Length: 222
Length: 383
Image (cartoon, rainbow over all chains, first blue to last red; front, side, top):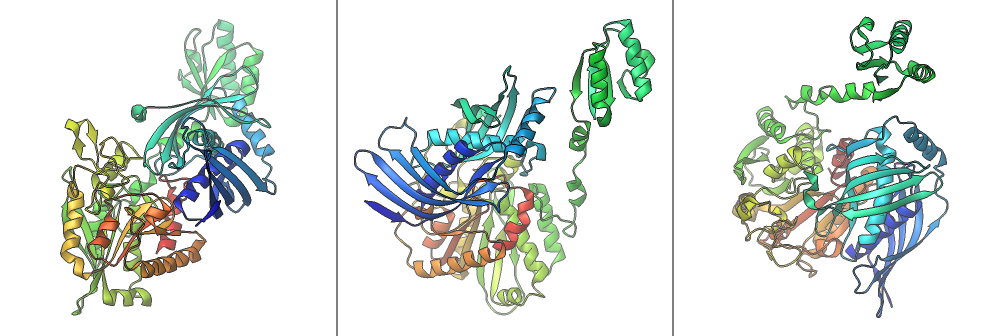
């Protein structure tokens, strides 16, 4: 039996944030990140012996092109009991996402032609600034953090990427780009800031992969 | 422009490099003069951007190995320039409301605002745990009428920089427009405004100097091995019951008891004293884009719930009318999570009828680290 929730309801917004993070991971690239604009409708279904399933109708926006929005339906299933199983997320996008092949290729070639591996810290800086050449690096972090968020979410958490503490490009002998990120996740319910390491692989036309990730102790921040 | 690092291996290479430098008029950083280029010694040359490829090709052709020491000279130059902020530091006339300001500048701003305006007076509220002085600003049109009070505090959580920025903006707007804007002047005929621009001063300073994402105050616990109480869990409203931690290392540590923190006591004592005159209590936070009503500790609605919601909904609609930003309205326990000991709940519980928490922009995309270029639109719409 599905219960209708107010779109502003805390549980709906947690499920929507999770669905968006997952979606961003599956569809994002350095040229495109997706964020949640609004929740149009939310229903919750309690499935005996299985878990809680949320049916959502969402409006997403393109980051940075905020005028570009896309509708989406998603289903999020939080499994009963087991803490080590990520929630199941399914989604359908209404319409096409903007093609970012060109921007992705430009970024790819820029990084490949660097003399030294890229290294950067504090994106954005304390005042919220991001140098334009770092925007793709930031979007890539957003997309990759979607994986970490998906794997670690429960009905009682709502994660957002707060800041990239450090990013280091790793040398590779193949065509892929590899970046080692230390990010800070903000968890809304506990208000905690959680440092997390993630190793991110990307190639244009191949999607983003997180090959390794691990939660870091708090004093990594010093 | 790029700076190359080369260690010439042979005399022929040295000669070639000397010729290259003089032909292309390259800028020698080390050594100063071409004749001082030596085999086995470091050579640093700045190559203008248009020549970078040509020089690289030439070096490759002559089998001279090189490293790019500085991939972008302009970037380094830009980074090392003193901030243009420093020239705006002094006066409220030059005060830049579209940038974030450190605490010393906010203190100066309060003094100057008071000196420049007949409406504003600065008052002592109390001291922080690190012994800094807390001041609030009273905006009051002289009159023989006794007036009701609207209280607004900002910066209870250190990392929410947009909040103190909003309080400063708010004061500026009132002072700039009270003579010309009939709504504001009528407002001030009947109401006094009390504004506390930064409640958690120690925490705010810490977020500038040490940890941008710090939230709590800076009270020491466990013999100085752990710091900070969440001031918005420290008020005497169902204190310590739900949505808190009793562990200092948590961001929602509620303190050793209700009003255990001097900052909390300073605000609570003042509001208790004036409570029969206070019509509305506002506390400004970020992020999330919400107008939150009591309570966090229970889903049971407050007695004047309908009226509270009605006013909040009108506010959200007006806010949206400016830039289309949507704010959700509702009680904390339904929209966000359960919490206890919040200042807003406490204000309502002691009898202040209209009590709201504003969570300003944004929705999570930038979160606490909202770019300064969003200060203006955020403040304008919230106004």
